[in-house]
Structure formats: structure tokens, C-alpha cells
Image (tube, rainbow, N blue to C red):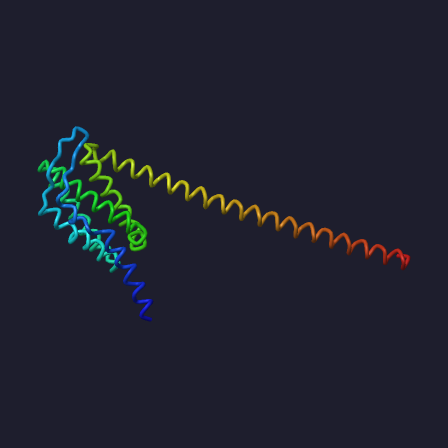
Length: 199
């Protein structure tokens, strides 16, 4: 029992750490291709662990409302930093949100497929905003990807049904052939008997 408990705690620790530990990098700076570096807002980044932990806690509790509320709050903070021109801190928040959503994708989808889609759309939205891409373009890309996935799933399901139908048809043909052969054998036996009886 003790070993099982330790194993469970280890798994929980991995899931928890996947959404945290961003505050440990507060002293780093973010540089673009021109090597112009921006200092991050250390106080804001220090709050990241707490904010993403709220998402992780909501996921573990399977509380869709709590997860959505925490993600929406993080999105609002990212927008706030972008509006203030603090892209370095915004990027830290985006990385934290993206990492947390991706590492808990399966669990979030199990809670609610709609919530999983909304979370991925939020990530695409904030990534597009900091990159200067219109949100509608990013959302359209996400929707197209979802449509492609759905189409592929539908095609696979249709193929399965088609295969099932073909198998049933083949089985019915085999049954009909066996029935025909059985009827032929019965008729032949009856005719042979009539011949012997002189009928």
C-alpha cells in the first residue's frame, strides 16, 4: 500500500511540475533577432506558479468552470502585458499557459471536449496576438485543423461501417449459397427416391 501511495504521489508531482516552476527563470531576459533584450516583470512572473497551479488544481478536481476561469484570467493578464508593451512578460505567461494546456490536454478533454477546444483556441489566440497575427486568422487555423481532424475521423468511421457492411453482405451470400446447395441436395435425393420407387 505504501509503494502504491508513493507511486501516486510521484505521478501527481510530475503533473503539477508541468504547470509550474516558471518563476525560477525570472532573472532571464527575452531577446529578439536584433539582440535587443527586454527585462521581464519579475513580480508578475513570480505569480506564474500560483496562476498555473490554479489551472492544474482545477484539472485534478475535474472542475471545468475552475479551469476555464483560471485560463481566462491568465489570458486577460497576457493581453494586459501586451497592451502595456511588456512583451517579455507576456511571452513568459504564454509559455506557461501553453505548457500547462498541452501537458494536460488529455485530462482537460476528458473533463469536457468543448473546454479542451476553448483552451487550445485561447493559446492560439494569445500566441497570434504577441506575434502580431490577427486573432481571427489564428482561430480560423485552429478551426480548420479541428475540421480536418473531424473529417478524418468521419472518414475512418465510414470506412469501418463500409467494411462491416461488406462483411455482412459476404456472409449473407455464403448463407444463401449453402441454402441453395442444401435445397439441390434435397431435390436430388427426392428425385432419386422417386426413381427407385418408380414414381
